[in-house]
Image 1 (cartoon, rainbow, N blue to C red):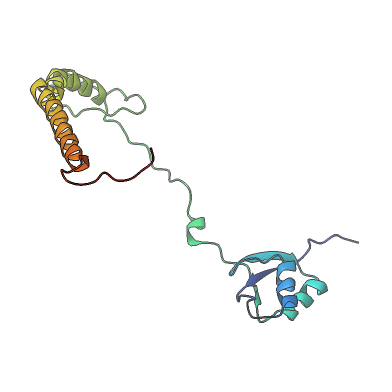
Image 2 (cartoon, rainbow, N blue to C red; image 1 turned 180 degrees about the vertical axis):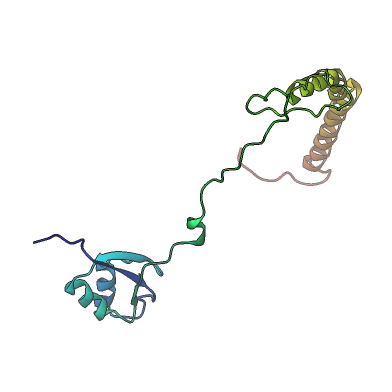
Length: 173
């Protein structure tokens, strides 16, 4: 006797059990369905088919979903290698060469990253000068804040001070 892979069916809950008898809701729960549009996979047996038939107005048997279109695309693409010009040394991996004028054949090409480092070193002092802020602004801003706070406290004290000719409010002693 040869063993076959067990056949399965996919069952989807397409309608809510609200307003239907509790026994039908129990059948839906016994199939493992809890939410609308939830799909479960169950063995294709007469017992499961009978449960599905009892609540056929609430569930549907769905087929296998087709594979998405993006699944057929390869994960990466191979491109042919770039050929270096004859007479020039091949560049190490990850570096590109700077174009050299044809008029001076004795000049060797320089990797791009070395030129970039030189440019960064030349621009570094100018960058530091821009980052500094004048000290006068920071000091002026700090002096202005306490003055406002004092004014607020004075206004609050005036409101809370008792007026002449009024009785003090009765409170706990």
